[in-house]
Image 1 (cartoon, each protein chain N blue to C red):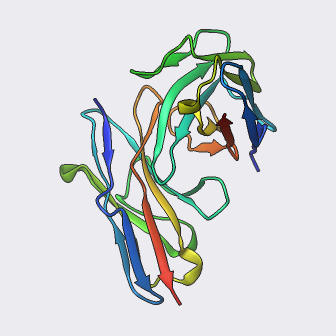
Image 2: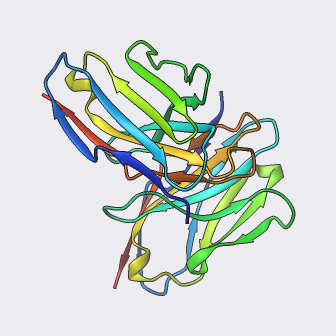
Image 3: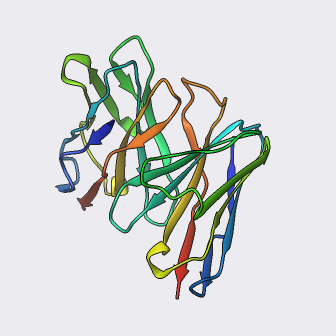
Length: 117
Length: 112
């Protein structure tokens, strides 16, 4: 079946450094990918919609300069947390609709646990 | 702004009890509706979905949900829960802009 692969699964970084998270669609092309953030015991918060070949669309309140998204190919989207701070520590999840269109459920990556010290 | 509300934050049931988890959304346009489940230590998995047609949809593992348009609701049900249903359940709405929004989640604990 369709698989979304996310890497790394967990990362620990020092405050002020940048971290890149990759999201790949393994057996389908994803023109659109979504990045979510999940706090402990809370729901997924949509951060941004990543569009292949164009700029990402950010949700209100999400800093686009801090959370850089690049969707360079039909199978890869990256999220870079720039100048990370402890408050950026969270669980980041990417997802993609199988057919990249309306009427298509999301397939999720396994998430990335980011800890900023 | 669009929102998805799940009224039950934590539900504890004994095995064989019936389950109903509430989900309401606020969005004026056409939507698709989903329920996802997250088992401990695993990623989100699709339980069921509603696009159009029969408002009563059946999903995997004996789950079903009913879309009531007038109430903007999409409640999840299961007649008899099992210990293995212990998980986090998320209701989600997909708008015509192809964006997905999730509810706050309901933690279900089933006691053997």
